Length: 404
Image (tube, rainbow, N blue to C red; front, top):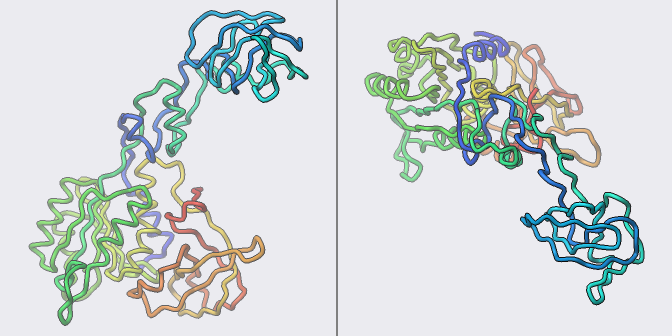
């Protein structure tokens, strides 16, 4: 049995290196940028009006109006003091104009613009290159690309971006007693909650599974499934059949396929029987416990950090916060505990941590409103209400998502 810290180090040390690919900007969102992006033009590319109004020169209160300038207008128009042009938002500011007066502050009579006051020089004009100069970096490598980054890339003249590939993930649940969710269980049968749980957790974290299947607890069936999925995926995740029971064939089957197991038991709760290994080709392989809460915690603490590193993230650990637990908690020594908690603020900036009652790692209902995991050290035996614990939010809690 190895400590949590050592297990996570082994996972990250054997994650595999990120691979680069080029993708169109309509598919690059949520990938990590592999190289810096520079703009091929000034932004804005010309002096443009920030408002609907009138482009004028100088501080006269009366201006004779020329033709209107609209967005996309390419005509060469020049104004001088005493002249002005009606102008639309986004239209090029005519040569000689040094400010734009908004429509609401003007009166027009017989093609003459009358002003009660003149705005300062430069008012309501977006000057050429004021956002970014030609050749300057607009996106830095290592950036996790969002929707606004896609717009910036397009403005910089990029239709294709160099990004790190997301690993192709295969998910297998095991168990002869496991049946599809829509079936009515016979005695001894259990509906398959783990498969949708895993694929949903991965998808919400930005890593949709490419393949998801179920296999019976039979060495030949498992071997065939694992062999096929290892050949067509980058990361294999197996749930169930990893402990030391007589029907827990997953470890031996993986080893028969040449998978080197780096560890099999971790000093943690939930998720003590947790397997991590590397295939002959160096592909990461996880064997998760069968209980759904253990599955959820194991993905959060081990699978997602590996996927982030493999996908080129600059950082892949969650930001640690601290909060006061609202109830007592007792445990035995020797294992670190991940407490599923509801983290909230109540009239102050201090975090409160509510630990719902639970009947164990099979009690998925106890996680319904949980949004974080609190950490109780292996040597801590008794936690009193009001004590402070470190915690981090689940990856799906987007508002508090940050990596160090």
